[in-house]
Length: 228
Image 1 (spheres, rainbow, N blue to C red):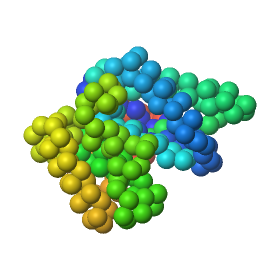
Image 2 (tube, rainbow, N blue to C red):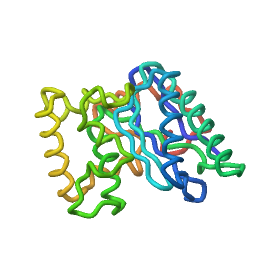
Image 3 (cartoon, helix red, strand yellow):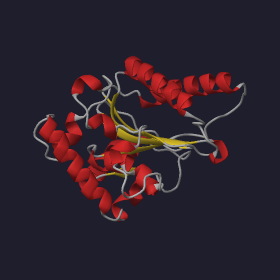
C-alpha cells in the first residue's frame, strides 16, 4: 500500500486529524480526554510545538500544530503511541486504537484551520443553537476567551487573533473575538472547508505553488497518483 507523502519543514502549520479504529470511540469519558491532554502537553514539551487549536470529539480529534522544528512525524508517533498505551492500560485492553495514519493538511496561516476546528462541535450537532460555542469543554476555543495566565503554555493565540484583526489579547479583544466566532457560527458552513476533508493543503494558489516547488523532488513512485 503506498504511503501518503509527509512534508516537514521548520515553521510549518498543519491541521492534523485522526479517527478511532473502525470509527470507534477514542475518548470514552472525560478521564480519557484528560489523558490525551496530558500526553499533548508532554509532546509539546519534547517537540516545542505550538498548538493554535484543538478539539476532542468522541471518535476523532483535530489539532492545528505549528512546528518550529521539522518534527511533525516524530512528535505524532510519540503522542499517538503514548496515548494508545495509556488508554489500553486504563481500559485493560490491547491493540490498535487509531485507524491507520493520521491526516496532516498543511495550512497557510492558522485562520481557516482554527475556524474548522472550533466549529467542529457545531458541525457534529453537539451544541444546540442557543448554547454558546464556549460551552464545549474540550476545545481550545474556550481557552482563547480566558486571560493568558489561565491558558496552557503551549497554546498560541496571537497568530489567530492577528489574522482576525483583533489588535490586543485583552478583555475587549477577546469579547470581539467571541462575537466574530458566534457570527461565523450562524453562517452556513460553506465550500471553503472542503479542502480540509479532501485536500492536501489549505491556502492560496501561490501557497500551493510554493509547496509544489518544494516537494516535487521528494515525490516518488510509492506515493499516490494524485500527489504525483
